[in-house]
Length: 308
Figure 1 (cartoon, rainbow, N blue to C red):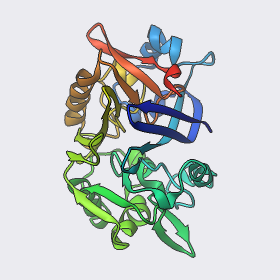
Figure 2 (tube, helix red, strand yellow):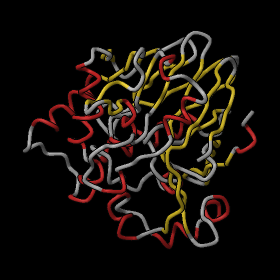
Figure 3 (cartoon, rainbow, N blue to C red):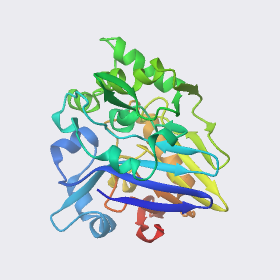
Figure 4 (tube, rainbow, N blue to C red):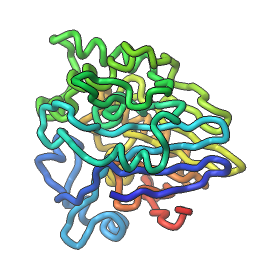
């Protein structure tokens, strides 16, 4: 798995890829992930076919973590799936060298802040690691920032068997929110490492959280601004590259699909045609790009040469 590095002014951003894979544009899966999507339309979209679909008609999916080193703090955003998690889907039960590769860049003990765009299992898994049968914070000296309404939502989900979540059975299994709450979210609270914050929160003068709800009730993006340069880490505002070309297609993993759709449009408009580097969580094979208007929608121009 690859790492890549960018500099946004005084902020060094390193991407670590926990997982990366090419897979077919599968109509059955897409009915869950993107219920309105049309595989033939995706395959026929010029810019998708040119930059994001390989010769076998496959698209790239990834799980990524970002380390942001500012002049005052080392921040980790989105901690992936984690190892040794007991999940409904066996494909999420990992045993990778992610933590070793992370440690080659930054000692986990030197991380100051951990923040998740939201608390789905693939964005908070390395919040904890298994030690002598117990889930303990992976970053022992860090302050973990939980958006209060996000935590409250998943706590209720985990504790109320009758919770109405709006997911299909398949997406519910993929998200496996109860498992993630018990092994990746609550143990950090119990260890006293969590600070509950509002969704709009400044972490450092260069790095701030911004509310972009809908995918989950407390979903945030990270904005980075330093020395006249800008980046945005959108988390799951968009899951798939075709979600950029068709933000009007519903996302099957959004907890509020109408709010999620509106939030996508508003966020895209805020970065399109501007010198803002997007650093994506799941889209590939190139993780970074610039969003531009394409007719009445958008496209992503890959930015592979921004690495230093």
